[in-house]
Image (cartoon, rainbow, N blue to C red; front, side, top):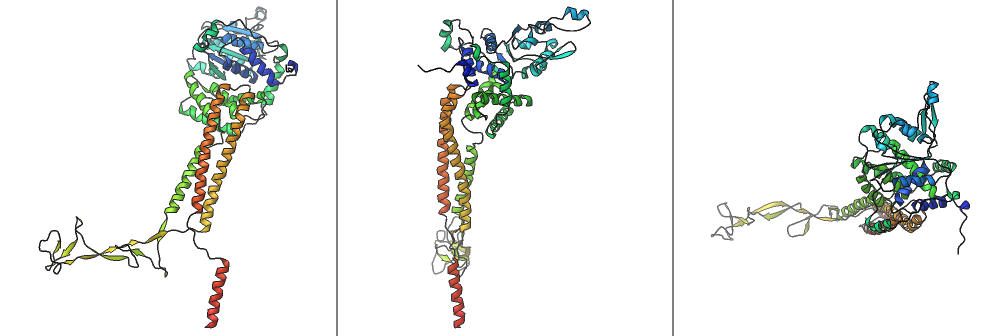
Length: 510
């Protein structure tokens, strides 16, 4: 039996992995929600769970409380008749007697580390303003002073989406959103036989407040590469096309979440894989989530800097240039540099015009009889070759053409540009091969990724690799095509010197 690492010596990553497993203990099909809730807490953000009653939403919040050492917990169901006292505590009678307005917050939301607020969008205007400040600034106005609150994260729940602009600011405070439905038919039998397992992590692996502070501060140092920025741009374009509004503040916090995802996995740079949080941060309606997930799944296998479409477009442009170069013709000249033409008999001539017999509209040859009238052999029964002369007219001869020969400078210039394409394709292939080799390792070692996506990611990478290799083949054909273009005869320096010497000798002889 292998020796296990003592809990106290486990790394941050190992502890978080253990906590995820503990939070999933005894739950069915809630792994996604567990990860969203825990990541939100690590980043100092909040989660909104949308779904019908009886789907373990409050249980998830209680389990989040169990992740932390000595965390206080607050839970409340709001109705449209709820009053501030239900959330923030009753007014102090003693303070009122002293003409002071102060609430007794002990045991209420301002005193909580983790809170679950059910039917959050039933909050009325009397509750709303204080709730917004508490969620965003972690501060609470009590009497004439504003206090810092120990709040780590709020898990909110609702059976329905908010209605009305006054709730849009509250909705925006919940960075991560998840639809929680009943368990699937596949897990229904397991649900019926489910035991009463609870979440009770060992004390040594629970998180302390200083752990959160450390994660949030150090994750700020995680690098954000251009590939992730490009992926965010692709999501923004999708949102604009689907008319989904996302605030600038929300985008800033999304980057924070991705950095925490990367840091807690042990990375010093965000990767496209950490963009798994994007679909859960960007939807406003549950039906928008699937399209965002598909966008992530399509993009996650390819680096944001990878642009197969751009390479294909450039290849197409150079294929057209090669075709044009091959098709280029110019007028032929004889040894005395006189332009050549092709007569009706298909022979080359110096004459731009040639004599041909005139025809009528139907293409019949025309003749002139002894009276000067035009006639054809078909229409004239009295045709006689001795009395009927062919009517001859001038016709422009076709230009005699030959394939254009190109200078060495032109060909080398084209080959240089094509070689740049080749290097780009080879670099893409190298990157794809590296990503394909690393994909299994990344999914195995990454805390937050959905392992079921691995086959799809590897298939996507393999398809991209095959396609790019076919593009490289096209580029190689371009190289061959340009290198085989007809070349102009270039007079070498030695040949020109010899020619000059012969001229001088001829002049001396004269």
